[in-house]
Image (spheres, rainbow, N blue to C red):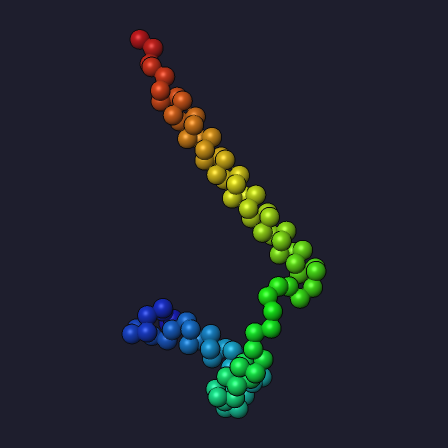
Length: 95
């Protein structure tokens, strides 16, 4: 059983950490050394923001543009629905 609560069971963060160790040690977790891993991460450091290739940038920007278009379409549909609701609610009923 997994949970986000540390008091109840194994946390998802702990499981992620264990999977990372398993992948990086190729199935030999007893060879993992946290201090060595931290030193490697520190030495690699932050290099630069951005995408590795122009293809990666194109895919990311296309996905972002499509997501923005879907979001805007949803907002437009909601605005139209609300406008239609207010328009029909304002009309008096015929006697």
